[in-house]
Length: 277
Image 1 (cartoon, helix red, strand yellow):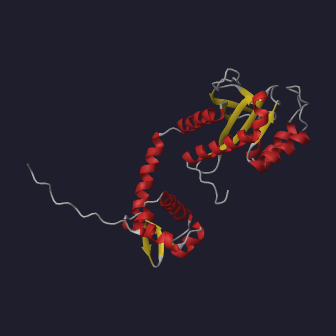
Image 2 (cartoon, rainbow, N blue to C red):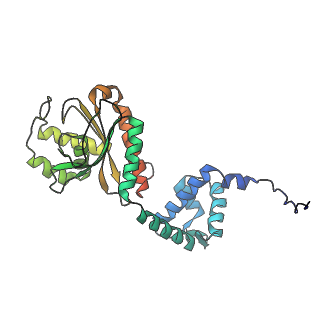
Image 3 (cartoon, rainbow, N blue to C red):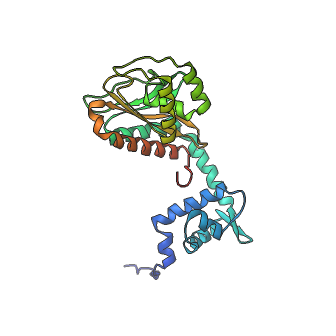
């Protein structure tokens, strides 16, 4: 019977080990890299501590590990991105190239449909600037649901997705649209006046969210939040479309769900919200 080989002594885990292996440390490493990506030049430990609102003692071991692996370079008391970071960046870009944005959006739409129990749509503004097209849809599993097909078009002024896309396009663009807008009644609700539409667009821009109840058609409630790419540009509206009879008591819930999933999808596309935003 063979004798076992020598047994390696088990080293006790130090406080530094525990800090480096904590989930919070992973988040801090990401934030360190984001801060250095955004910086115009090398950044010292004190400035990183201030930027990340994290004690210097909590960053020191992480910075040492990143420097040892060439992800960061340390010189003259400051840190900057090293060759390891750029190699990782190239690998991530290649992986990102292989994944279609539409697949990432679709995955998020499925999650939102499961969480909300409602139909989820992805809408983009058409080239004519007057309408929006639903380019993808995940239908609710409920027997009573909002049904729509990819390729269907809707006006901007009376839909949650349309109002959102109008608001994020900018004040000048919205003003041109409203100048040419002709009020029309499309449901039992009165037609929206140009003055009221202008106020709605401002509200949507401030909230970064749009909701409509029985405006495009009776019995339909819409909730829309923007999906942004790595550069911050809005690529479309993520929309929850639900029967109004099931939505009246959960408008805030639907707004929260739409915002959360739109931000999650945007992150997968490379968007990083400003600190505190």
